[in-house]
Amino acid sequence: MLRIMLFGVCLSLATSAALAQDKATIEKLNNAWTAAFNKGDAQAVAAMYAEDAYVLPPGSDIVKGRAAIEAFWRQAAQQMGDALDVLPLGRNAAREIGTVSLKTKSQPPQEVVGKYAVVWRKLDGRWKLATDIWNTNK
Image (cartoon, rainbow, N blue to C red; front, side, top):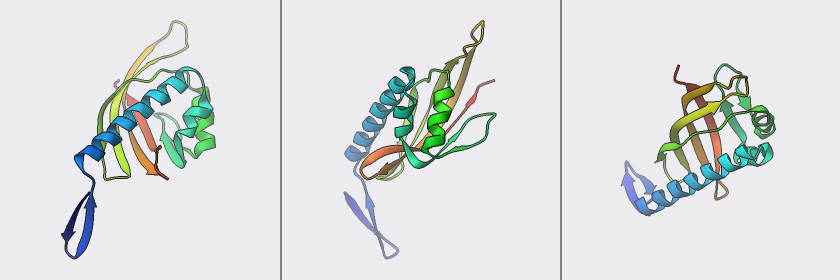
């Protein structure tokens, strides 16, 4: 931990090793999210969100709170893509940007390609999704 005095305020900065560890943890959590989603386990997906989290789906209303998020993902019939960049935002937050590849259940199935951004927060020592937004490329 690096401590810096700036304008009379002591700032604590996490070391790059700690930030790399958090990035690796978030990538593992993304894998767990995708595995739960692909199994259709909306409860496990929703458990990865903070109680007061937001999901911001395109063309839909904001979804707020873990119970509403669980209901939202329960109805989702899509597969998610890959994280491209995880940026630590201090010790207790991180921003992730990635791609999304979705296949609809319509006949014939349609492929939808897009991107997403999420904000992770560390709550009680565990990473939870705080904000989740995505949209299509077309």
